[in-house]
Length: 316
Ligand code: G3H
Ligand code: 13P
Ligand code: ZN
Image 1: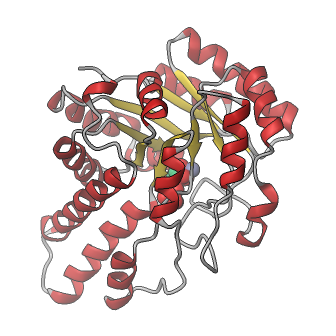
Image 2: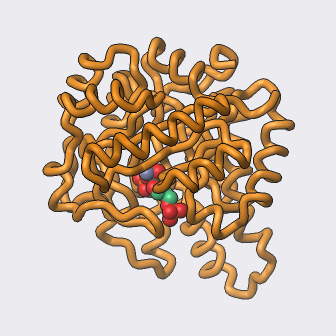
């Protein structure tokens, strides 16, 4: 089966009260770890590529890896999605490159400008049968190419539900990333966070049946934080979104949950462990292999948190 869009996945996820995992890919081992998990759990999948990933690995290599994953898993619906495209031009490039879904993240712009660029992307993407995720409101946290508000300000930049309704009507986007208290990266919060479920609830009442997206949804798992710190790392203050909060959002209108940091930490933890326990090791397969295996196990677990395990066939 060829790459698919997200329309059917979101329709089924909305009706079934679950969410699709959207995992960021940057190289072969990360992709294989994710694919091995979804193949075992028979879950629908969104593989997402950031601008940073395009720069790091090059689109042709990432596309080659994803094409193999799709060919080897004909019973699994897999979408290839641009994560945090910030201009019309990058979104157009990805549509032309064969992505089945693109995100235009113009959330830093004033409302009217966000509407304008999102509409342009929607027009071009829909003309090419590609779906569009847009964003309204601002998340916290910082990654390579995605800079948000400071962690103290997260609650001041939540999505305004009335604006969300107007935004979706004016842009015609297919899904909307909302700011509901999550944050990108490993240092999301200083204390146990409370997500704004009231915002999710309010937006979904105004836009019945419309799929919402939750970015910054890594949980910063203790297992990997502890391994990283035990084997020479320095991430003592890392803190993420509790998994029970993710499960609760997945039962609501949130149909796509973005996870990158948990993949990075799983891979890093295992590489650090091998380097410290076997300092003479210099075969990359001996440290990337355990990293890939840790990603597989972690993603398998996440698919149950999102409750999308076993849902591949209904999303085809
Ligand atoms: O939300 C952003 C993603 O985690 C991608 O991060 O721009 O460092 O690749 P990146
Ligand atoms: P995390 O940093 O929480 O993994 O979020 C990833 C993300 O939102 C990608 O768009
Ligand atoms: Zn994001």
